[in-house]
Image (cartoon, rainbow, N blue to C red):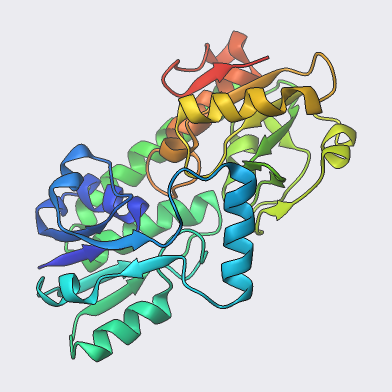
Length: 294
């Protein structure tokens, strides 16, 4: 089987379930595992590089309002790969190539590849998506073992924080303007022994304001801006620290690795959050994933 992955999370899952050797095309964002970087790139961003968060938000909002694509699908590169399966999503136009664009490209190329659309909205659905990809690639047994391992780690976190008062927490998915979390992130907060003061499981993240952030009653703020690693998250968190109530603990996390992408490493993010919320029970979070900013 020859597989093209148009999602970084799907690429991670494909390699994790043993289908990595069949992956023949990826996106420019597919960087885990590192060997994914050796595959031909068929999708790139339409956004200019190096924009600050406020400018990214403006450009994305304008392009979406105008019905313009945020990603470029290289039909020429796709045509030469002879794909049997294309894995994509229909969850978020900001995250990856829209599924309609994929279908249009395949029709134009007269390509008969199957299209698997993976759209998890919650943490349980993320685990289910691993099984779905396993079934589609003939690696169901390996996928089931992976899900069992991830479920066991989640159960262990829940056990360590059980009986402790949930910590009111605000996780920012963007900083300028601030965005409250949605989809699987509130599930992660809950699993780690927290209570999400803004945002809800399975819903879309949404733009909020600093007055709402201050009034939300959070006892800790976690900065997890979509698409940014730990160093960048820490820099963005520091830039908005003065917008928060004085003395409120502020953390930055590696959002790119363990929060924004619905794949196996979300469990790493849950473990990191448990260390932030309940260090006495769960241990300090791994320094590669989380950093105290204020």
